[in-house]
Image (cartoon, rainbow, N blue to C red; front, top):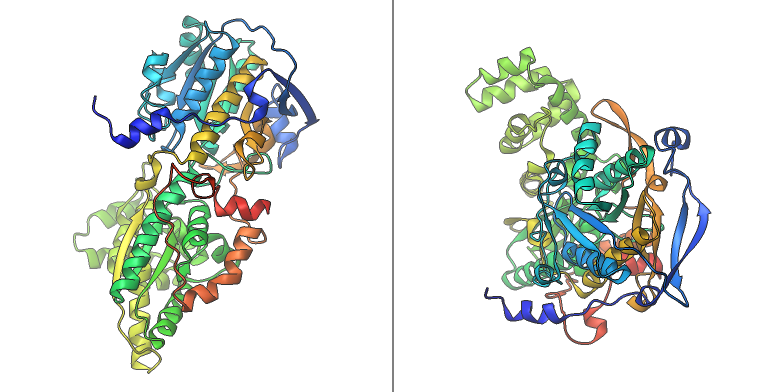
Length: 551
């Protein structure tokens, strides 16, 4: 197989480990934990895995003997840079416990466990994937492990392969499912440990002991390179406003980090819009105002960053979407009547007539293409597929309309041309940065130590991430500690609490203090591509978010 020169070099890279993991390891237990909310309800649901202590690893004077252990691993959900290094860390860690240990990978995500599809991951096979991006080593999937029949089916293959521990690498939902599985197997004395690893480029799986999810560092650096390239083009051509939608359905961490790295003219933060109860009209006024100010200075170009989940954070749009979900619910009379109308304009008129007065006003103010997307694109549950809405085009067209009115009133002089982009999949499978290569390897290695200690219901944790890797603090966090009860599909369920952008935290405060200057001046920063070789100040820097949080 032919591989690139960079792949050859990355294959030789040896990820750095915290000092505590390099030799013999001892576990130090901290205080007992409780869930972030709904303590009584979570305790009832997780009597065997609730209230466990935080764990920190320290250097030990002598190593313990460990029996060989067979371990299974699952990649769950969307891809994130560094997943292969998590698996590398698990493999090397369990081989250090006992060279006879084996690692099995379940194919295609959690569904591979249920359907008994797996491979043994050998040293020879794994070597082709170290320090590479993607999840192609075993594939991923979005099957949810929620039903006892799935747990029992999975247990069959775990018993057959004599697997004593299962590592689930995923985001908040996947780790919630891992915790449910850990509780189920513990309650039945099944003899299977379950450990989670924090993955998501969205950055919304974090707290005081999970400082960041893996993949966020690499993905935001890839997006920031692309944004910087576009900023350079905008500053060169001086004739376009670039509206860039970025991944981040539930939180704006990606947008904020990219703004900190590139200093665009506009960056919308969904959490701030929700906090201020801003209307779509107010958002458009804000953006049009910046365009007009720059035009008055002779700069008819700029860059605006928009999180993909923005629409759901605008109160009036959230209300509109809820009403549309009811009106066009599968099997309803109005859905049948709607589908019987052939003409798109007539369809929009029909929907507008069914909405409340406030929502009808919002709906009819939207560009026709966006209004059509809201009525036509449904998910399997009959809900609007918000991620498919071209929010960048919605805002661009509405700003253009507002500027046209301002021009007639003499409040805007200049031209307004737009270019639209969506950066999402470009960042999910990039070769991991040195930071993510090291962090992921440490997370996997930490998982192996938790397995060797007989722990279950824990998430692998590596902290102190702005320090050199040798000074990172490895350990384990009970997954129940991160949980609360949330309504999902009409039912209250235990889930890991999503971490939204905190408006009182240092990263947002720094952004808010500087954005007015970035808006009017051309203060672009061009980060360039990820650097793997060279001085540590260039190659090993964590995200701006982490640096500001821990300064």
